[in-house]
Image (cartoon, rainbow, N blue to C red):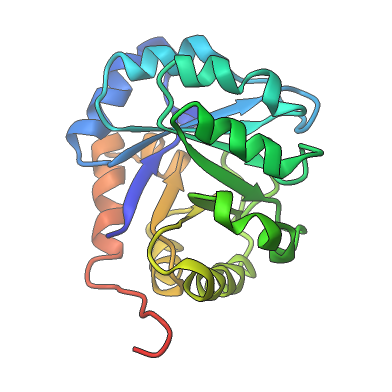
Length: 228
């Protein structure tokens, strides 16, 4: 099953609760929370208080994406705020194995995000600690960027790695430039979670229509496990 994760980075923050409830009721399975610190990426966004606010208005999976340096300092805060999944960047932490262990010790699913220029080999030695791989299909820092087409091949290679290591137990998420136009290729390549911001919250017919458009675009598309 492919899950849709609207990124609240693109929502109207003055109406955060309404926006989250809208995509929840439209059938989005995850709610994506982008956290930026102005150091790891050239933007500053939100903290644990917003994650807590999101948790208060939905029972969906709260997917927190930490685009910050030294994420270990703040992981407990986001865990207490109600995150279900906490993702860190392989490029942002010195001791990735320890960081993933911390997330799991707090009872949360642990994710690793890879920037477009970061090879998949960066996570080979921590596969046993990973619940989610996030392929960045834009350079992180801002919403609304153009999709990097080479990301589709990277998703396909990540799917092959997952199947070779531990079939079916690691989710594969794509973040950046996801829309009804790019979603079909990503779904066919093996993605199981699609993060979309402006394509959902900026949809001319409203956020619910944005969710529906992506859902319709991937209807009937399935990736196939190696050897099947």
